[in-house]
Amino acid sequence: MGASGTVQGEGFVSVSIERSAPAAGEAVPGWRVISQASEKGSAAYNEDMSGAAGCCAWIIDGSAFFSGAARTTEESEGAWLVRRIDAILRANPPEDLTFPAWAERLERQLRQDYTALGEGHPEREAGEGPSAVLGLIRLRRDGDALRIEGAVIGDVSILIQDGDRIERWTDPSSNPFEARTIAAATADGHLPGEVISPKALAQILRNRRSLNRQGGYWAINPGLSWAAGLRLFSAEISPGATVLLASDGFMRLVDVIAHHDDRGLMDETKRVGAAIAELRRLESADPLAERFRRVKIHDDATALLVTPDLRDGPIEKPSQDGPNNQGE
Image (cartoon, rainbow, N blue to C red; front, top):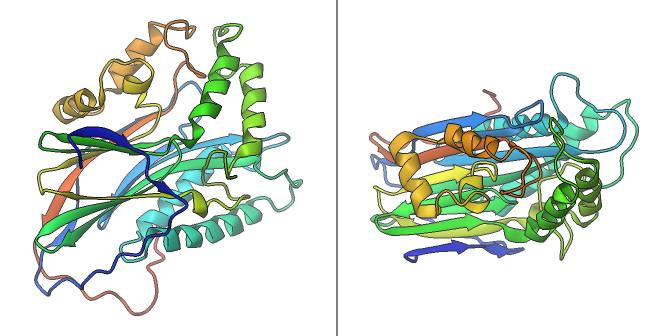
């Protein structure tokens, strides 16, 4: 990693890394959760989730835009999709598969799940329905060192701080589309109590025509192929490194409000945990988005802060009876 910077990753590239098997009795690398927080925004449901299992940790941020009736009743379709991805990760984190191979499996599973959810409902146009953006990290031994591997699709952020070095992994493909939506949302000003303006919603639906296409933007979507949009990252880190996985709602503290830069946000999160209360105070001081231009006054905000955990004890032999299918 360099001293500081944002890395956009290698889109549309499949990377296979040869690894030797860990020796018996060698400490198993995983993640220790330092702090974790999530809070819903202006909408009715929180469509963010984060978690950690085995050597993996993740952040997921969902949304749903469609015409006609919803296919869910107790939650939004975006929340349904995020919860499903989280359950799959917790039950069987991709500790050994390459990220592209895992993404292809997830794509097939979610397509089947959403088809089942849609039984008895009208067909939708391609791109309508729920989507989710994802940041996923995995910790590996690399000889005597540690290596973090990452996969990102969409506008979540993974910040890595290791000594005086800091780096952000993200996917900028949605930036020009988000700018158009913000322009539409703020053209006539926000109305009090309005979550998303009709103009902004119309722009979002226009944006969806570019979802998961070359020259467009990328997100997990059960009705469209998305695995080709996965961006892959890798870096060597020390045992004392810290990693922040954050939704774009939490990253408003840097990217919209400019209350911190990446380093300042990392330092603050390590010191006091995810400062969602401070974020909400700053957003509430601009209730019509006149100073800080944004689509929703409050977005779902989620942050997970982790550090390497070199657990003692022998590495267990993996089961030969197939994947672990137990849920949360």
